[in-house]
Image (spheres, rainbow, N blue to C red):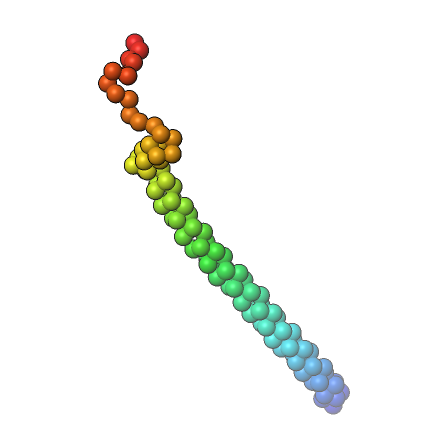
Length: 95
């Protein structure tokens, strides 16, 4: 009979402990999900920034190739700097 009374005393304690463990587990799941969503948002932001940087880099490369083209350099030299190609009698060859 002592065992039955002892078991009745332990039963609410075991149930309270199990309930506490379930609640702690639920809170841990919520916290883990929240942190995971924050990290996912940061990853998406980083991907968008990377794509923007790649677009800007492509535009800069295109601009550089346009500005450095032989035809543009020659035209700018003729118009702004008043330069011209030397005539054959103006060339000096040094050996």
